[in-house]
Amino acid sequence: MLYYYTMNNPNYENQIKQTMGLLALNTKLKESTLATYKRMVSKLYYDLGAKKKIMTLSANVMPMCILNTQDILKEIELADWKDTTKKNYISLLCSISKAYAGEDFAKNTMYLDYRKAFDIVKASNDGKQDKQEPKENETILKDLSLKFLTKNLNYHYNKIRSPDSKDIESAMLYLLGHLHIDQVLRNEGAGMVMTKEYLDKETHPDTNFIWLKGRNVKMLVIRNNKVRNPARGDPAKEVYLKGPVNTALNKYLQILKNIYGETLQDIMPLVHSQHFTNSSTSQDGSENISSSHYSQVFKRVWGHKDLELTTTMIRKLYAMDVRDQYGGNLLKEKEACEKLDHSQETHNSYYILNWD
Image 1: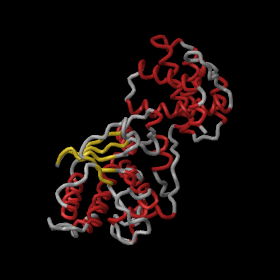
Image 2: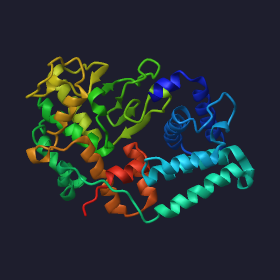
Image 3: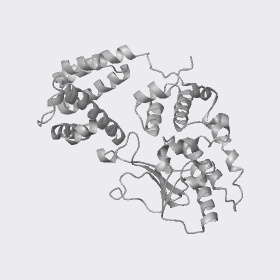
Image 4: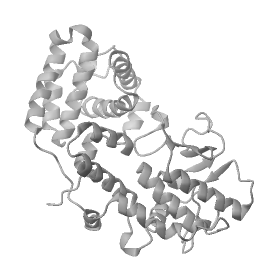
């Protein structure tokens, strides 16, 4: 409904475009933060503008949609949102109004209204942190660590030590383990491809891929996932793969060559069903496996039926490893959020499990 409304209401799109242009021009926010803000702006303008008519989504220039400070703040206060969500949206409104006011922001009534509300909600939230109760299958995470799981991948490596190995299933599970420990992905691997050349975004706007630039130079490119939408103009996430995950990739490519010959295709699926035994899906090796099948395959990465972990469980384990290692270090928490590709609200509310 949100995207339908966006595409069919030019005033709505215009307000979002002007807001993001204002923030980009008058703040020093990182591109990743601006991308997060764009998603928040879209939701806030939709909820309070399109649905409840609290905001005026007109064709007029900024800041028409956020002038109605008291009604907007009242609506946020009454919303069925977590305290951290309310704080984050009021913080967003502070940033927008401050950017609009410019150097005289300290005298701007609109900014002062939002700033006062932010100080109040922040004070009430200090010392509180929403925590997620672990699901039944997540209780195992209490006694696990990423370091332990990394060692556990030797179960697969021992099967592919030989340079002549053709055990493609073990090589793939070994690679997936390192890829998810290193980059804490969601299920993006299901539709991912490996490519010899960097894929042009105009030709492949929705494709997630690993660019095999060289033996020791490989780049992970995420263009489309739960929080990144190319149609919305979200930037891609690009990360060079180093260390164990690069080594695992080289091993996998060598085994592919052992099976199919030295010349590999220019674009290859990262995972497809013919590489796996006990598969209930089509054996058409020319296509990537589905997201649901990827989830089933991933449960076999750790080599034991008692360690049938999901990609989300690995992400939560990473979040808690960072917390346990660095305590309340906000910089490290922010870096973890950027790596996990989610907001700090999501991080603290859903990824930090409550063992009490």
